[in-house]
Amino acid sequence: MSEVASLERPRPAVAAPWTTQRVRWVRHWTEHLFSFAIDRPEDFRFRSGEFVMIGLPATEGGKPTLRAYSIASPSWAEELEFFSIRVEDGPLTSRLVHIQPGDEVLLGRKPTGTLVLDALKPGRRLFLIGTGTGLAPWLSVARDPETYARFERVVTTHTVRQVADLAYRDFFTRDLFEDPLIGEEARGQLTYYPTVTRDAFERPGRITDRIADGRFFADLGLGPGFDPDVDRVMLCGSTAMIRETAALLESHGLVEGSNAEPGDYVLERAFVG
Ligand SMILES: Cc1cc2nc3c(=O)[nH]c(=O)nc-3n(C[C@H](O)[C@H](O)[C@H](O)COP(=O)(O)OP(=O)(O)OC[C@H]3O[C@@H](n4cnc5c(N)ncnc54)[C@H](O)[C@@H]3O)c2cc1C
Ligand SMILES: NC(=O)c1ccc[n+]([C@@H]2O[C@H](COP(=O)([O-])OP(=O)(O)OC[C@H]3O[C@@H](n4cnc5c(N)ncnc54)[C@H](OP(=O)(O)O)[C@@H]3O)[C@@H](O)[C@H]2O)c1
Image 1 (tube, helix red, strand yellow):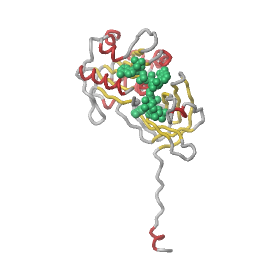
Image 2: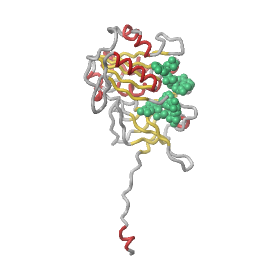
Image 3: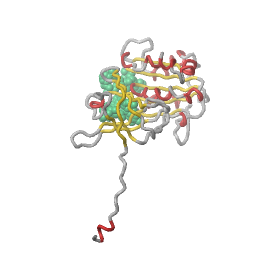
Image 4: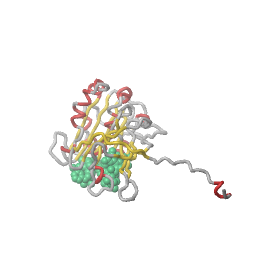
C-alpha cells in the first residue's frame, strides 16, 4: 500500500440538509392557491409558527429547488401542512402546484423563525395579522393549545384580493371550533377577521387602513388603538404590508421582539415583493 493510500480515511457521509417525504393530500383553493401535507419524520421537531425549507428534486441533473415555507400544522401534528401560492413562472411553485398524493417533496432539517409565542412578552390579547399566504403560520399558532393558555383573546386577520382567496374560511369559522383538542378554547377566545380588497365584501379594504382609521378596533369592541401593556402582535405577508403595519404598531408604542429578546410584536416576510 502506498503512503498516500494509507493516509486516506473513509470520508464520513455528509447527510443532505433535507429529507425526502411523501405527499399525503393536496387541496386546490383557486388557480393560484393550494395546500398540501407531507409525512412528518419522527425526529422533526418545530415550534408552532416556524418555517422550513421545502422543495422538489432536481430535474435533468440540475440542483433541487428549495424555498422557505411556513409550517401550517401545529407542533403536535402527525403531518406537516403547507399553504402555497402558485407563481406563474416560479421555479418551485410552477412545479409544486402539480404534486399528487404519493409524490416526493424535500423537507429541510432545520425549522426556524420568529413567529413563535416565545418571542413575545406575556400579554392578554394576541393579534395574528396576515395577508395572502401569510395566513400559513396562523394556522399553526391558532391550533396550539399554548396560544390559548397564554392569551385570553386571539384575533386572526386575513386580507386578500378576492373573496375566493379566503382559503381556510370554513376552518376559522367552523372546523377549528369543532376540533376535539382546542375547539372549546377557540370557541371562547378566537375571532377570525377577514378583509377583502378587490371584491365586494362585508369588511372591505386593507387591514392597515382599518387599523389606521379605527374600524378594526370598533369591529372587535375594543378601545381605540393597540395597548403595549396587554397587546401582542405577529405579522406575516408582503414586505410592504409588514413595513406599514410595523410602523403603525411602533406609533402605538409596541416594540419588536425576537427569539433572543422577546417583545410586543414579531414579523416574518412570507415573500419578498
Ligand atoms: C420565511 C418565509 C416563509 C414563507 N412561507 C411561505 C408560505 O407559507 N407559502 C408560500 O406560498 N410562500 C411562502 N414563502 C415564499 C416562498 O419561499 C417562495 O417564494 C414561493 O413558494 C414561490 O417560489 P417560486 O420558486 O415559485 O418563486 P420565487 O422565485 O421564489 O418567487 C417569485 C416572486 O413571486 C412572488 N411570491 C413568492 N412567494 C409569494 C407568496 N407566498 N405570495 C405572494 N407572492 C409571492 C414574489 O414577488 C417573488 O419575488 C415564504 C418565504 C419566506 C422568506
Ligand atoms: N390572489 C390572486 O387572486 C392572484 C391572482 C393572480 C395573480 N396573483 C399574483 O400572486 C402574487 C401575490 O398575490 P397575493 O394576492 O397573494 O398577495 P398580495 O399582492 O400581497 O395581496 C394580498 C393582500 O394584501 C394586500 N396588501 C398589499 N399590500 C399591502 C400593504 N402595503 N398593506 C396592507 N395590505 C396590503 C392586498 O391589497 P390590495 O389589493 O389593495 O393590493 C391584498 O388584499 C402577485 O404577484 C399577483 O399578481 C394573485
